[in-house]
Length: 247
Image (cartoon, rainbow, N blue to C red; front, side, top):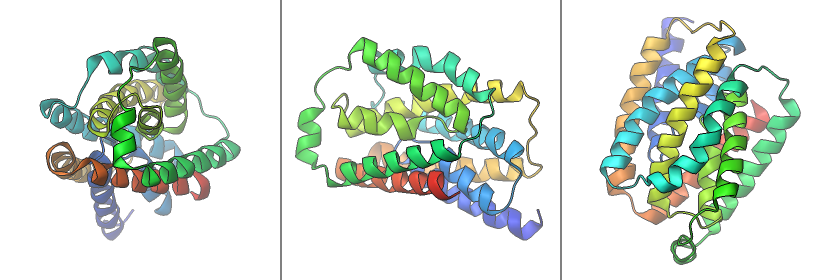
């Protein structure tokens, strides 16, 4: 990559990190899409996206936890099975054409549901705890999908928590940030067992991701209303869905 490409890609990563971290996500889908547009090798895209995810998710987890959005009893049942399966998924490379189409359409459907879901209904529904078996099972499945695709899992966990009424928007953001962090670490460790390489410009991408993560998590954890966060999450899911289908 030449200097101009590195600068433009870094700016795209900064923008993705800011948008995704405002809703408790870390931006892997956005990073993968941006890197694909610039023709980075697939062998470098997945570990690079996971590295950036770890950085942004760390910032988001700290900010949302400090703002009182994290909830341990909701987090651990999803994380307990996702961690080992994210590691396994990270170590596996599979043909993903059909899978990406299905997941992309699912995310677009979830985006529409979230965008049309009223605040009153959302807050009223977010009162019941997640059943333990359902949380462990879905967490494991999301962890495996996260490792296979190189994302942290927030794009799957967030709509599940909201649409099932297991959390409100701010608690969803806080739990998703921590979930993405642990999944990204596990997926990256699994991926590196295959001796994948990282792009030489990764330090510049990392600085951009950190800057975007600080900006986005600050606004998301303290300054944005629940309706705004919900609409931003819908935008995030649209971006991720389109990326899954077309990139």
